[in-house]
Image 1: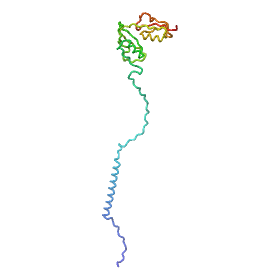
Image 2 (image 1 turned 180 degrees about the vertical axis):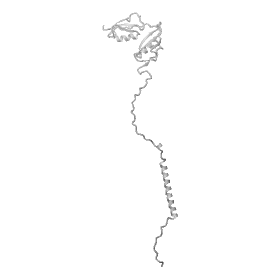
Image 3 (image 1 turned 90 degrees about the vertical axis):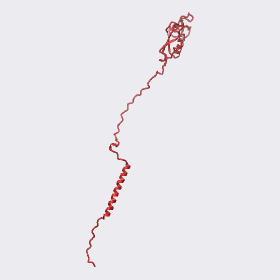
Image 4 (image 1 turned 135 degrees about the vertical axis):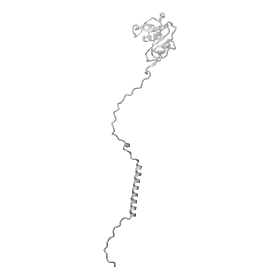
Length: 210
């Protein structure tokens, strides 16, 4: 038998070169895989915006009060609604012109400028044709000839207002001696008197109670 020898444990053995190489390879692969995963995750999130590209948030400001403004009304470019143009009455004689003016409820005044009573043509009006006027405006009608003879109507006994309208219709003007109330109790000249009046002359009437 081999003489007894005291037991001595074996000295610890170090890592073999092959084991160290395998461990290093595994660590390297793990690190490379983590890097690749990080790159892919970053590419999915998009590029990190620079500080200058970040949206700037400012404190909300209270808007200034808006002062209401009054909008101007529509501009009036034409004549007012209650006006209308003076018609052109120079194409006929003065009686036709007067009739058209009266139909428009305008006042009228005949102005005879000539010496020939046979010339009743209209030279012009004032306001002129086309001028804007309102109802009640008096229009002067200028006649080239002289005033022709007028027929004096008989208005005795008629209401004063009715008598006045008839006198005006004949181209004459009523002259009231005693007011305009009641009926006509006298007139001058009478219808039976010789015809001495012309257009624009006056007939004197007295109104009252008989």
